[in-house]
Image (tube, rainbow, N blue to C red; front, side, top):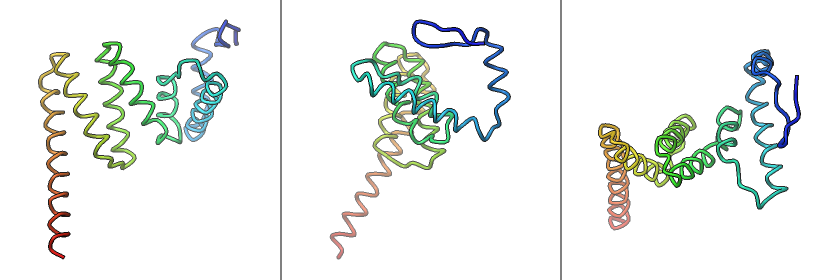
Length: 160
């Protein structure tokens, strides 16, 4: 069922992998993804000079019962793709990061704004004007909300 490769093991056929995956309960799959991601992190910690497999870790943690751990890896994978001028892939990672923030109820405005601004520029580069404008507008609204909150805090501080 398995064969040894230079870097580890793999299934001899994708149907074997698929059959084993499908036989796992929906409750068990997230735990297995967590264990796989943790094993990858452990292996990387033992070889700190090697490249961090951020794409693999983003994938596994995003499907795990520790989805909160996926956010940083999704962002790192998006930045890595953008550095390679793979903007469509970067957009995918950053869109997934925004979706994860929403799913987890995370409200880090600075992080959200960074994602929105980058998405705006990358969509612009990809000539996807509608999405670029939408992301820039979302970022602008976010900035205005932050400014309004800061103004209200300043007003409340001066009023007391």
